[in-house]
Image (cartoon, rainbow, N blue to C red; front, side):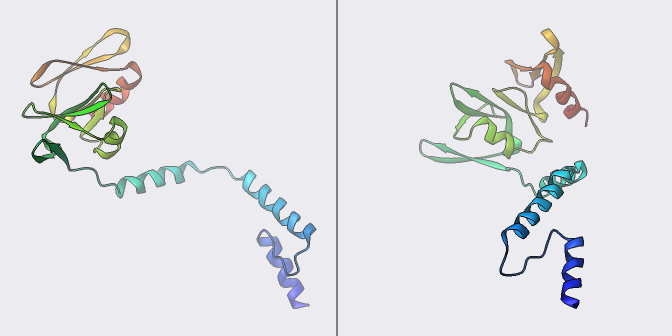
Length: 172
């Protein structure tokens, strides 16, 4: 008798408790109860925020690049990178010594690997370092034009969609 009461109590506070041999109607009832419980649950936005915070805390960003050269390799520290650009499906790093190095990573990969407090993905072709931004000018249709130190001929445009997040990034 005690076992029957224990099983009834378990069924009230859980999905179900199935004993062998498992009968099809009992299994179907348990699965139906599970589906109802899962479908009624509302996602908690605080959990998503917490997951993002935990991911960011455990993130370690790239600190240097190992660049292949004709006769060996060169190590370029992240603090030496002024900006990164993509041209003809090749990604290039531009150092503060105005040296241009080709890298095998894509712009998307680099965006994930670089510290977002130091680098901003301006558009599909450019990632810029916070340390080289000289001026920002309003451009056509809500876009922004970024002028960077030492490179007055380089035109980096921020789209209207990214302009707000770019200004927030600069204003931290």
